[in-house]
Amino acid sequence: MIGDYIKSADFKAEKHVPVIEAPEKVKKGEWFEVEVCVGKEIPHPNLVEHHIAWIELYAMPEGAPYILRIGRYEFSPTLEEPYIKAKIKLESNAKLIALSYCNIHGLWEGSKDIIVEG
Image 1 (tube, rainbow, N blue to C red):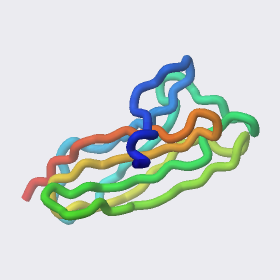
Image 2 (cartoon, one colour):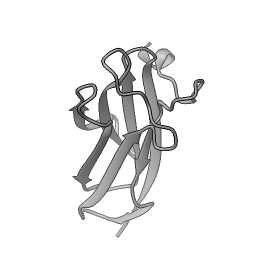
Image 3 (cartoon, rainbow, N blue to C red):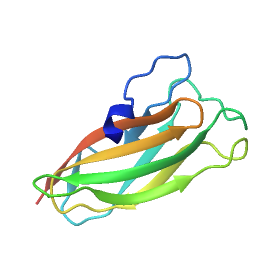
C-alpha cells in the first residue's frame, strides 16, 4: 500500500511535512482560503538536485465514502517555493490532507481538521 511509504514526521534538519494553514471553523458552502507550504519553520532546499516537486491537496468529508482531490501544484526547482494558496468551500466537517513529494526523500503528509458550521 502506498500509505506505508508516506511519512508524516521529519527526520532531517530540513522540513518536508506540508503545513496546512486554514481557519479551524468555516461556514457551510462559503469560500475560504487554504495555504500549504513545505519548510515553514526550516526552509527545504530548492535545488535541481534536491527539491519539492509537487503538493497535492485533498479533503476527506466526514461520513463520505471517498476522498476528494482539490488540486495538484507542481514546482520548478530554483524558480518557485513549495507554497500554494487555494480558495475552497466545504459542505460538512472535513479533514484537509496535503501530500508533498521530495525528489530525494519521497512522500510526506500533513493534515488539518476543519469544522463546518451552519
